[in-house]
Image (spheres, rainbow, N blue to C red):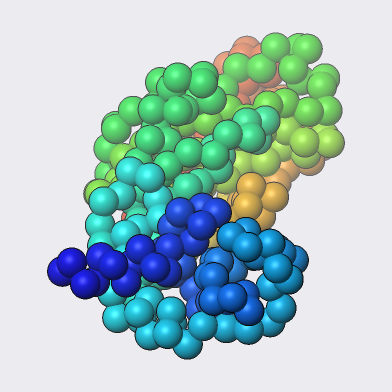
Amino acid sequence: ENFVDQLKEKIECPVCLEIPQTVPVPVCPNGHLVCNECKDDACPTCRVGMGDAKSLLAVTVIENIDHRCKFVDCEGFFPFDKIEEHAKDCCHRTVSCPQSKCNVKVGLSKLLDHLNDADCSFFPARNEKVSDVKTLRFNMTERQRNKKNLSSYLFTFALEDTSFCIIYEKCDGLYHFYSVMLASEEVCAKYKIYLVVHERDASSDEFEVSFKFCGKPCSIDVDKEEFHGLQIDEKGMKQILSKSWSKSGSRNKFSVSFSIGKIPTLLTTM
């Protein structure tokens, strides 16, 4: 074990003080190593030009030792050929807050805390379990109705051993509704969400005006610009709001109903 520790010390990057997890490993003419992320024109140890040399010995060591996960809150160690696979699904991996106006990056295991502490969630992020159709009710002010852009309204729910968000926002006059699961793309591919935007206080057999989306939820691992779901233009939303007004006297009000489940489990159809 002492010999292995000595080898680890010798291949540690002098800049970030981490053991490289990618190969090949750059080496200067004097034998000093540096990781690929920290490599510059000059060696950080002796300042000579780095050149394009690689250390075969460092690669041999790296490929035969266990590596600690790169994410701060994870204490797991993994073989070289497993560390990248683990990082993609690590519960502490770094993700972006799904709220459109928030630029914070945080460990996935702390995302729900962030949503609460930073007021990024419309209601406190919770672990309310969803097993059937769930309906969210929205009331817009006249000022909000006339704005071209509205910040995200974000709601969180629990499903089996993961959580997901329902997000509503308005961008350039288009109303966007989508779901984001706090899981990898591989996990998201196993689920399907059925989402309907409709007039206020109507059951599924009473919808007169509705817009629907059926597909897999977005993964928290993708860029926010790639979030997708249901889009409704001003004309379509006006139809929903007008129907709410004529049926119940509710001005600028609408509802979002959704169900989510694993494929091939059939979702409750609305």
